[in-house]
Image 1 (cartoon, rainbow over the protein chains, first blue to last red):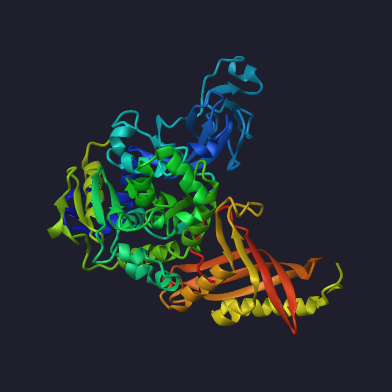
Image 2 (image 1 turned 120 degrees about the vertical axis):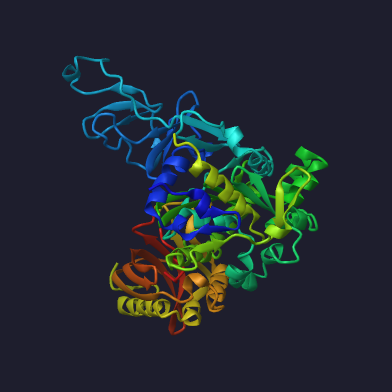
Length: 414
Length: 164
């Protein structure tokens, strides 16, 4: 039976079955996860030639490698002979992969190098069975993206206006580059992946879900999403959206976006001022973006999340701290604050995760069938760049996500 | 190392009794009682991705100094730390207790643990090895350091919001 997505996804509500239906999940894998651009990691994770690290794209076991020429590849972890894993270690450095089962070997770009007892195949060089490769790999600001579709929009087309938000993150580094070198926490939740994505875009929940930590730390984050906030939620198109907190940060002093002051990070601020001159002021005031890049990359100022679906009701959220190249003074603080906030024991994310899981249990109830996404629809407006924006705690981002989701799920299958 | 850590005078039985008490306070969400065990220079560390990471450069599940332990406890006590409200039902076993070495005034102790956590999501088993640094304070013992290495530290973990 064909699912009618136009019935399940309406402008102001979406159907509960989108989170629980096994067939829909299977179709999402084909139409989204193995087709559109999905973020898998960052080039800094494979900094040197020969470095490799294992990644997941939904259930696909992928090895991200860097060749001696510096090229980053995404290889499928599956021997061309009998389908065994060719790489067991989570990370390492090697120019080749050797399957332990029968000794077939491959270069870290995927080409076959050899197979033992080659007379069984008519001699050396008779077979040319390489490792599977993710057909399209591209990077933006060092983020590595994978598309399993041979053709389709380029990464630049896919990112659209979201690219500017990744630029905004990178410009916080005195060297213009971020690094994701602190390793990943892998946080597992019994919830559909879309509940995570929606929550990332949701400026309505922080005051409620995170009130406990805001109250004990005196954090100002809650007020950024209050009814009085001048921050906006922006639909960036292509399923991407941001919670643009700059209108609030612009009322504050430099570095307040990070809950600190210039005096606490003098070396960093000096470097940035020397590099950017007058423009440094804007960079140090506006801080980092809060952007959800469809379908799985979420940057929340100091933390980078990559969402990976495991099953219709299970998702792993990988998270690490932003590290700014050339800013050791900042990096220690970024790491410490990130550890306190995110992951399985994080003072923010553990409560978010609890909400996704309760949501997943809740949506199995038979009525009212729908989840409501109308908040702020009546007060949406178009900004000077043509993007739809809503108030700080409106569901503009969610509506943008669903609109793009629907177009992918309804379009011609590849 | 014999049963008595000679320089610090901590006996293995006394050490065990302390570990069992710490475990019970955590299991029963006696947050004030648990927090009171710590020294002022406390460090509470749950590494991720193995047991030999550098916590100053790499992500950890928990890496709390005394100040952050206090924040964590305060958050739990608001009753709105939803990941522990309602709280998990917990019981843990502490076993294979060994006095490993003595460093200055601290006795370094190792032990294995198994925690069974029950909450609406389901029942989860958490196992691993803990390294403690214990310090005598008058008639009491205080906890200066607790490093919890989960056997699953390299795997994806469910929310771990109770005191492990």
